[in-house]
Length: 220
Image (cartoon, rainbow, N blue to C red):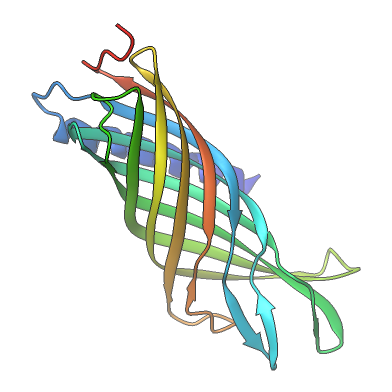
């Protein structure tokens, strides 16, 4: 419950900040504001040797997020994005004679830009590249099999980068659906129990969005 509340507070703050940032970009402009929510699947490629055993920190899981952007021109939008990625438990290993696995959860506030190859004002189907930079806060869960109540946690923080490719289908001038894939990378700072210095992983999501103050007439 605490995690859900924290995610909601972060999401609200970053959507509001994205709106304010977009308003600054769009002052006196005819270009629209854009808000979207998304969800999908996620994976982790974070690995580390523990006591000589190759260990996966996460496997396959899910992702969700919120975005608020302001268009600067027909080909560029910028704002803020907040995402949560639960990479699920990785492959079980025999660690000191105990069957053990690890899960990584990732919270990512990012400054995000969308660079359009086919601008929304030019096409009902728009191709774009999302590029993001910001922070990552992660939590690693260690689970001992056959004793699910015996869990240990370690928290990490660092710098985050994101890049990908997406396609939007624009409906009714102000709404759109998008399909997007990203690679999410982070460099952690400070010490942690597993001496994990970085983490990566892919995420694929479906996005539902709405634009305000838009002069784009896709279907007229």
